[in-house]
Length: 306
Image (cartoon, rainbow, N blue to C red):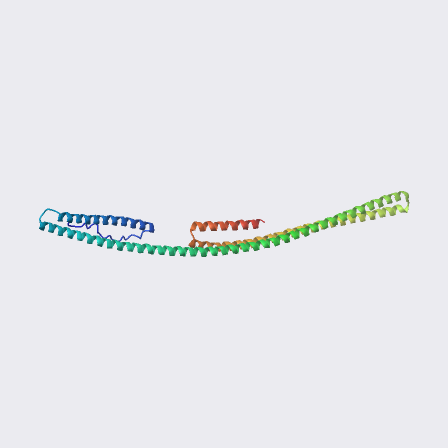
């Protein structure tokens, strides 16, 4: 019991490796505390053993001088042990305070980083909500324009249908008049035929001349009817072509507007995606942008198909 194990009080050098993570640091701190508790228990056990040796030495039956020398030596060992214990406890307290300060600093830095990340996330989310609101406003405006164009197209269809009905009525009226005229002509021909049977001489030549004139008039009238019918068909075809061209122009105008809006939105989305990449976790951001792009493509596709 004359010496103290110096291995227990060895000073550990600082590890040059990178600082451990919070969980590893806590685990290492727990291991270090457990090791220091075992060392302290060993020193206390040694101190109590020295005390027991002193007491047993004082109570022994040997000579007074020998007992005094042994007691003094044991007291010195006991004092050295107690001093070592006190120094070791002081070192342990300093190390614990240093570990606590390091842990508190890491906690403060972590809290600051979390607050900064929350602030950036809230700012990015607000920006994204603003962009979504502007996109919805643009979609609502396009929907209004499409409704107006649809109303104009329906109005044009009604006008074309009315014109077509009027032309049909006009053609039917012409056909009725032609039938009436043909009936009158046939009646006149039959009358002239009966008169031709009764009339002789000079009237026969006049009847032939009249029949020729009537035939010419009828042929001219039929030609006029055919010409008018062809003109009516040409007008109907031209009206339908004009209407189809008007519809095609309206559809191209709507497609150009939708394409312009879609390209503008696609040009703005990469900047928003880049900003969100710096502010939010990549997987959540990617899912949000992909959902936004799918929603915009579905709406744009539905509008173009219409």
